[in-house]
Length: 205
Image 1 (cartoon, rainbow, N blue to C red):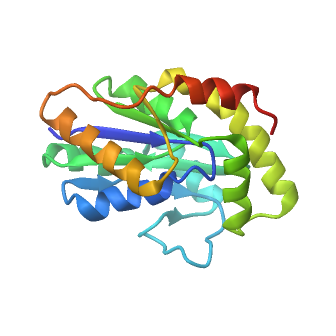
Image 2: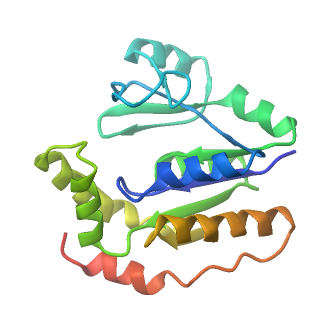
């Protein structure tokens, strides 16, 4: 059986970029593609980035117990196909999840051996700049995401590892080394995130 790696983070912390890099450089990592009801963004591809479905279709799949986990994020539904995940694990490959903290909690409750990583920004100001720079949201949505981020960060202690995304290249190196250590039953060595966590929870948004 393969391993199951979960990655969660507040919006704008580089989670999807990290997961993409990990999969590109490690053929044993298979991305779990989420099903969602939100609208497809211009750069996204159906069946490659997400399975885009209607709310009615999502509801039917949920009633049929097709999802390993599901959650509502910013008013849209997301879920992970149970059969896909179990098939990859049986083949001996590792499944990597790009999901929110609610989904992470659900997956951990069903797979006790899963390893979970939570990404945090170096500061709230750095997070705001990233949200503005990516030009995906209006100012009102950015403010909402900032407030949401503070709430999400309070769940850091539900994860096995917390990593600060100060630089995507450094982050990738740290996480890739951690995954390698886990595969070889070695201890994971990461910088202590507690000082940054304390700052994030008290810093003005």
